[in-house]
Image 1 (cartoon, rainbow, N blue to C red):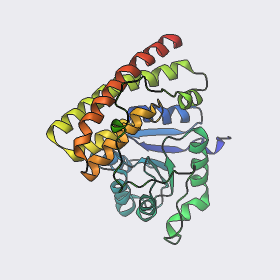
Image 2: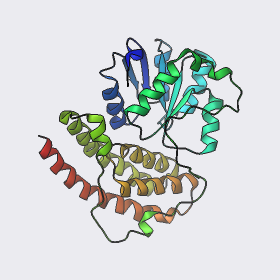
Image 3: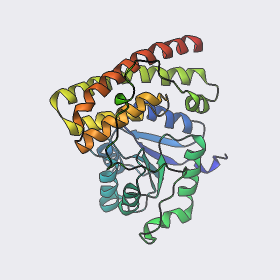
Image 4: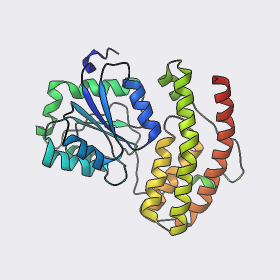
Length: 282
């Protein structure tokens, strides 16, 4: 896709996950766009008070201040017109309505590839896209990829109840290969970031579980799920999703501990596989 429309534009990327930060910045590096990174919603709000941007990529689930709250503050106090694209793993109708009502101009459903990213940027940066805030509330927010129906209010059966025997989980690097476009150094960087950040996330989940801190358990599990959007391990993703929903709804909490144990076992196996992949890339 032609990305000339991005040359000279300034984009603020509000994203707390290091892997996703690297993914987005790598995708934009060759387009001639200028970008800054905010690690959470509060940082994004603060940066907008001192700089002007042509567009904001706003992750929804971030620490300190999430994307919805940040967008509400931006629209109310700072800039009513700057285009804001939500980045989210959620896909329910309720969330879709909230994107529109909050004042967002578009949605990127994670994980997303280069085509989806550039298509959304192109659509939202067109002059007509800036009128979306004045359109009737029933207008559906732009979506780049078909979104699988989700029912976050329905208790989810944790994969740990189905997968008791330990097995080598599938590792899917197709998305990473597509984004890397033959750049082995970039692939190695993403894999190393994944291997370094996941143990910290697991440690946070263990602490949250021990403290019965379900609010932060939900956030930590969501963060783990986000990290699995490029280096894809479906079994680990499903476990993280199950823990996220159970902690958020505070239902079936007794199933979180065995799910977390299996998640850790899977990561141990995945680490061995990925280290061999790194050796092949060297």
